[in-house]
Amino acid sequence: MRSGCFVWDEDSAAFSDYVPVLDRLGAAAEMRGWALDYARHHAGRLKWDTELITKHFRPSRLLNIGAAPYLFEHLLRKALPETAVVSIDLNPERFPNAAEILGIKVIGRDIEQESIESVGTFPLVIFCEIFEHLRADLLSTMRRVSSAVEPGGILYLTMPNGLGLASWSRFLAGRTGPVPVHEWGKLVSIGHMGHVREYSAREVSEVLAEVGLTVERVVYRRKREHPYSLRNAARLAVKDFAVGAFPALGEEIVVIARR
Image (cartoon, rainbow, N blue to C red; front, side):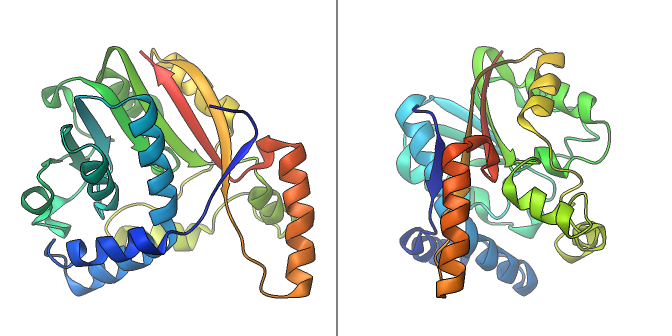
């Protein structure tokens, strides 16, 4: 992988392809609405992840932790049809038909409270946009995640960059992180925690080292923004220059670690 800050864009084709699949997953109306909004804004990011995983790893088996709304599973099954996919989700009942429709194994487990030893080990464990949601015992949880990576296997982790430009904008607005009321409110509105804290690459690397994983690569990326006015175009030009000069200001971190 090259250096610099990678860029991903919204993917309307991937979103449109997912919608009829979502309609078959059995979600209630509120959850379907959340899934549609999530897919509309994140299909491009997960497509980027899928393409990287397909290019560099192509595992025979993989474990994805944090499945809902199963957009990632849909993309992975299309890109890697021979790969056995196992997914852990906090509450599989939110999308009760996912295992059957997608041809995957879904295991209901709260990784912050329950052992995942019985799930087995895998050459690739995916932990995308979950680290920042952890709210209990961070080290114990990550030890469980690490234990699911077979010796020599890979943990593929992504998360927001706690030192990215978006975070600096929050600092200027008097905030040290995401809005607590909004993020904690997600426990009721969608059934899982929002962002507890957003970390830096150094901080996540320290945690992974503590639980027996060696970080092999850290890259930064961001979502492409499209100007809607001349003023906005000027702001984006400054932002593009800053991130181009300093990739570590990118809004997201991708970590590849080995056990």
